[in-house]
Length: 129
Image (cartoon, rainbow, N blue to C red):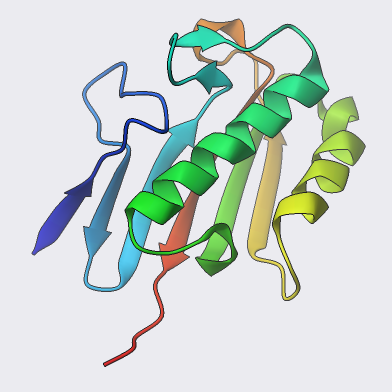
């Protein structure tokens, strides 16, 4: 059985997808781009601000699913320019504690709304039963 995760604290879906889908204790997080939830506009052209907004959006969806960002076990990072990878590492270290999730980072030709970064992931919720 799957449960759809939705929160007003992250951007609403702009297509035929859900913010996240939970199956048992696993949550599949859709890609987040640097949209401000209240306005659905890109936060700015600045890469650092875009990356911080993406992580804020991920935090909101993780919390809506009953977990936190440190429950993420795998992230996929899509960048328009791989030279920004060091900045991603720096910002990611502000949100994650060790042990860090598995990760892939790839450069892509284009992202929705021509943003510089998108991140999706898989979260495993702790089993308290």
